Length: 220
Ligand code: AMP
Image 1 (cartoon, helix red, strand yellow):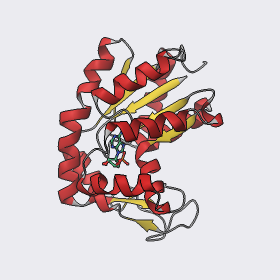
Image 2 (spheres, protein in one colour):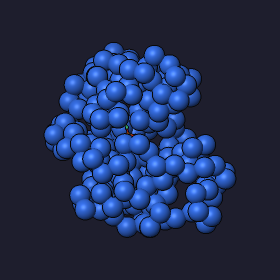
Image 3 (cartoon, rainbow, N blue to C red):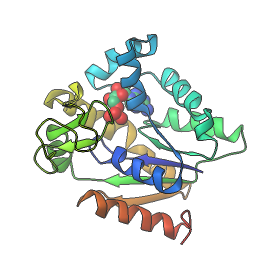
Image 4 (cartoon, helix red, strand yellow):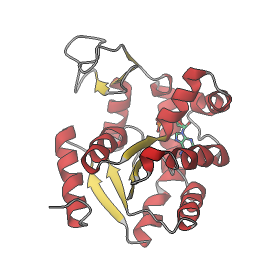
């Protein structure tokens, strides 16, 4: 089973993808996390991606698609995966469809999470991420119990360098220009589920699970 989480930066894709992947026992594949890992490890892929990530632009399709398809062929993805942050434009979506068709597989559902632009800016500005386990906090709305430390693993919280105001502006532009058109692409295929992304994390998870239930992807 393959599920795609679609939404603007800050919509909560990562948080919801983690919850859904756990519930359905699927791999969670996050393109941004894979790039950040490569960057931290100082690999060629990381060096290639850095230039684009720093500017809030998309890493070239060929590099990104190859990275994701490779990750999708790992043993833990055999039963399927929740894709978070990929595809991000029409070219990537078509390349993914083609690769899956070659294995007689297809995307089962696309969950589009919508959040107002004002809320996205608020979330991204206050976002802090655990360096160790990637849990996401917001210093205003969902702060950790102890400042600067992860509640789950005690790891150090940091602000992503691309969460600064200028880069956020660019990332939102890129989203509306290149990624948002995917909503129509998948709607036409009849596989789209639209979920309101405002409210608490648990509320959004409940809405998402209910929508997947309706599509009978989760056994009642
Ligand atoms: P994210 O963590 O999903 O916000 O991604 C962080 C950055 O990684 C993006 O701003 C892009 O530079 C890059 N990136 C992540 N996913 C993709 C993708 N599917 N295509 C191209 N670039 C991506």
